[in-house]
Length: 417
Ligand code: NAP
Image (cartoon, rainbow, N blue to C red; front, side, top):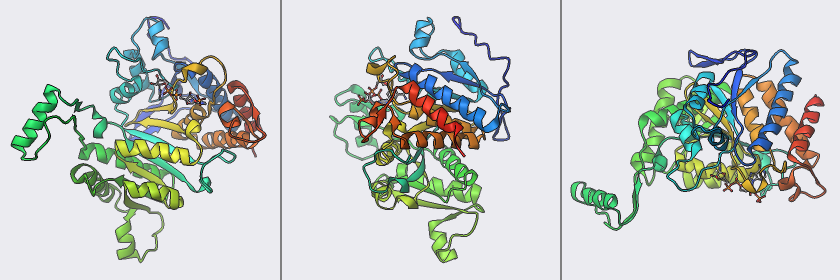
């Protein structure tokens, strides 16, 4: 590995991207980044469960050929950069990869490695499925009613990094320009940020969300925006979302307006309902009428808030899986950080990376194995054999280490019907 020209396992074959679809061989090569801090613990647990699930479902017919690639502290220790070019190239080449959490070095002008990975690979959709796992302590009465997949735009909005501090030359000049040229008075002492939202980036995100809904038989896609206030960014997101639905999926979708105008409120078969909600109302809706929502597509900032709020609602912040997906490239990841105080203690909950791995299996088209991962994890939580974070919230729980939790999931995989 040092020197870093990766040698892919000869027992495996690369995944191919053709006609907008993945072509997955029975022994796909899948790169993994172990991650920093608790990364090695949660990765070892996740790999154990994923291999067991594939073996259980396909009985040796299919098998992932894992290939380690470096990023973060392990790359720095191998005396290469924190994000080596070969690592990016390996993810591009092999199409699907998975990562543990990575430390963002503080100071020194370092950019978050997670943000760099997303940007360099143009992984424009942050996909966060949120559902309830029976037995998990949750703050609402019916956490099981929420079952959504959030597509959060990953590349623009106020996350574009276009901001300048109050009192800076740049902020003063921008305020002066807007005041003078655009006749919109801005206080010259203000800190300023820009919120770019484009048609092309909105439409590729909404397109991915609608395709997902069609492929998975989901009943609706909801565009969540704050277009009543930010008309030309968030409002445009809504308009461009409806536009792509009509232009590219006209015979597979129906808008909420047409549902009432043309279909008397009765949903036609084999169609996905396209609707929109204003962001603040949506936070009420997921609490009050959670079962009316399925796939959600939203700009970056709304998506950031909504993903964590929904995950908290089902008691699943520590279990929430995620993926960053672009055209033909996908990187699955644990959504928590490196929790450095627990590093090397074999203590933490590996659920987030295990479930992200389950998403990866589904992304490969190995949905039966992905479902088996979810069922076995749920069975394990229901049996109250859990890691410390869940044990402290559950009565009569048996607290186990990270690796033992994984072993229990593997045992439960073996006993699935
Ligand atoms: P964090 O690593 O997520 O940890 C915060 C707390 O969350 C932990 O102390 C622990 O709570 C709980 N926690 C996190 N993961 C857990 C798990 N698997 N099982 C059980 N409990 C878990 O957040 P942070 O301390 O703010 O960030 C640490 C580093 O991670 C930073 O360098 C940050 O940049 C990085 N980070 C990376 C990612 C990523 O790679 N995607 C995401 C977020 C942060 P208790 O103390 O209550 O036990």
